[in-house]
Amino acid sequence: MNPDKQWRIDNAQHLRAVRLKLQPYRQPSEAWDHDHCAGCWAKFAEFEGADIHHEGYATCSDYPKGARYEWVCATCFIDLQWTAGD
Image (cartoon, rainbow, N blue to C red):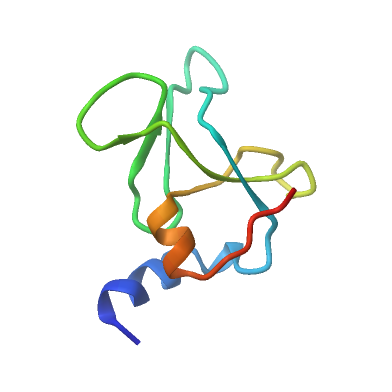
């Protein structure tokens, strides 16, 4: 296993069998304005800035903590070989 991929797999292991869907990032509340990729810790937000992601793969409504609670960037999604949900 490529060491660059392994640490991301280790970080996101809890999402292995979870259904994810590609969608735009929307902040959940005024007080919660960003999230991070479960694999590499990249930042998701609506605001502009260096290395800010505006869309990614998020958990769906069947996830115990709810839809859009966990996020995965496109790079980690591909490297981890996950399949998006509907």
